[in-house]
Length: 236
Image (cartoon, rainbow, N blue to C red; front, top):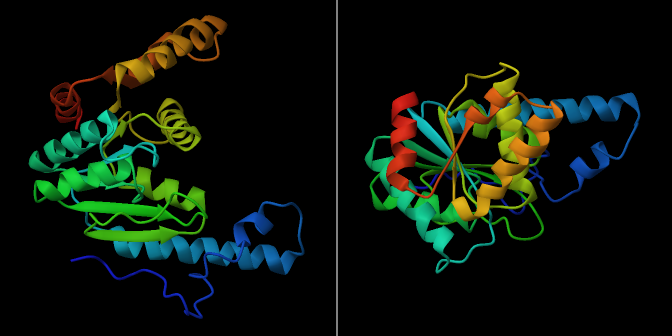
């Protein structure tokens, strides 16, 4: 059964009023001290709300990826197969809760009878909740959402995506590189998509000394669901 912890359209809950531009105003620059304190309170309550909904997930894998791939796309089909296999192996599948790759992974998990979780972000376009979620929470602030997507997972799968997906994978890798979180497995699925990305890391970042050659071991590129699950199984 879906969690009903979704803001009501006519709710007077100031935390749940996600269409009022509070994040944009917060990031616009310096404000009066009381306004900054009010924002801090919103962040705190949003964290508490996330902890309440997402507690006790068991072994969990977060799947990142684009909201833009339709059902017939090969990457959607791949993500659905992945979600199915992860659930069959006993993992909770967590995504950003939206359409595209996120929907596909959640759908695959539901197909296998596994637990399917969504951490959605309210945006004007694209990011609507998909219908394959057992539990979800909607966030106003990207950074709170990213904390939740990382906090509860023991492995990460990065499917093809855009700026948001790159932001998520680089932040996750940075947390591992700086020892803020454990070096959990990170699997990038889609060699055609991620092959040049890995070459960029090797021939530019490593070559210029901005990362170490050993940092390349933090991410594994594959086309195989079997290999992805094996990597996750071996390192969790």
